[in-house]
Image 1 (cartoon, one colour):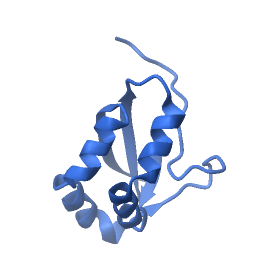
Image 2: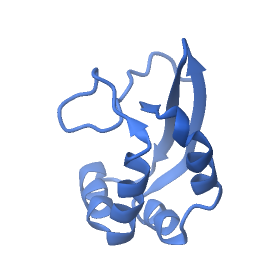
Image 3: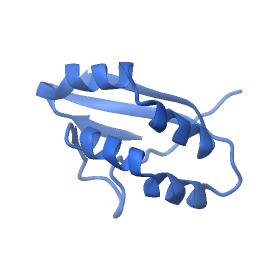
Image 4: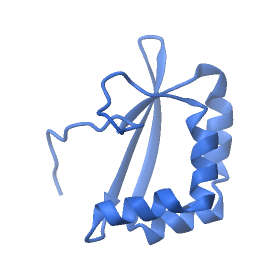
Length: 106
């Protein structure tokens, strides 16, 4: 997934994730999210976040609804969303833009 990042929020975003809230991390685990990484890159003068995770559950929609209903996660998203710039290319209902996987090797 990809999303823009406000240039004046880069350091705050890094600090926040360097000290991620325990409740948010617990919810990720409970929602069957593993190996979650977020990368930052400046491209043509703009900053972008790229995220990757592995889902290990059996009902993605249910787990994402559970995560979205969690009050700690809602507070985290309220804070982090204010740092981000959604892309015009995102699908309706998306905050982060999903990307098409064109290659995978295990």
